[in-house]
Amino acid sequence: MKIQITTNCSGATFSYIVGQTPTVEDWLGVDLVRAGYAEPIDAEAQPVEPAPEPTEPTEPTEPTEPTEPTEAQE
Image 1 (spheres, one colour):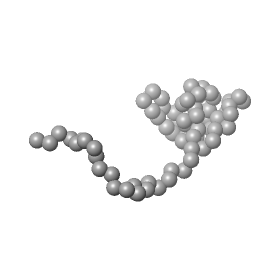
Image 2 (cartoon, helix red, strand yellow):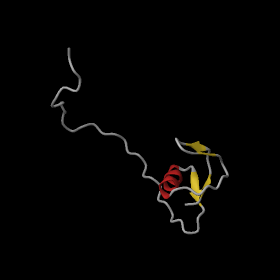
Image 3 (tube, helix red, strand yellow):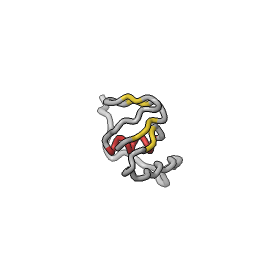
């Protein structure tokens, strides 16, 4: 997938600056586009739907108790 970088970004195996047009693996291109760091420029690229907005966490409706101890007690 060919993309154009719109925001400087880096990961464990890559580093891009604004304006670069790398060809990347599809999973990485989709991830960078969804995160807003890049735009697809490949003629065959499908539009990527933006990630849904995060929702606010909710409190449990019933109290929850651990079924087993999570830490060793001495």
